[in-house]
Image (cartoon, rainbow, N blue to C red; front, top):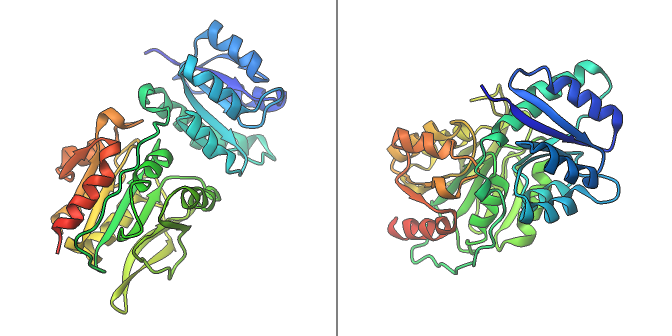
Length: 343
């Protein structure tokens, strides 16, 4: 079996060596080079032809984000960003990175080994299979859609993973303030979801925040499940919808889990919901989307041609959970079309 060729880019010699040492233990990974800055990285890319590059955001001589912006148009490649807690990581995703991991505050070799084993290696393997043509963000023309039928019982639920930060943004850019309340699970490390919510809020017409228990689900508003150790579910309180964030074991290897959210929407909202499953590795959300469809909800899956990773939508499609499979640019319009057919 051909190994995944990896280039490690980080300005810290110690961190580079630790990454190389721990990544090399995986039999499916081959380290083909290291670099301390983007200029070295550029030369190593041409020389070593890596499949995946790990890239620190903060680098000397040129930032990792600026490097990505210059690199991707000329030499598209799969990149996993390693970042401290900063909203700059979303600039890196917009510039073309496949995914990111939170840089650990390493105090021991054991902690670094755990970070590499549980986080970084998984992201590298996912990135190695990402569709390169869909890594770069596409600027979509925002089309104005309108609701002809307004019902306070309606709700939109979205789930995504790898590539989802940009995919969710592009879908929500197509929504106006008349869209029913939106609840979202995007697999993301703790701390980053609040920054992501602010980013989407600043760009889109809907109001967006990181969810807290007791937050009301309202038209023109979007709630994003917090990353970390809590799931998010929909609950009905006093004739309306609220969210509840609660600690529980991982489901499908994730916390928060899309399945947990979708299952709760199926039970609480039933036929008043639209479920949307976007790009991501694995099958989280597929069974929940099927439960939603069986409960009478309308469902949408992102198509293979526009996914960074056609994993979650494919599993959902194969299960029969997806009613309409759409290109990313058509999902907002399909959402409105389905809502306008609902009572």
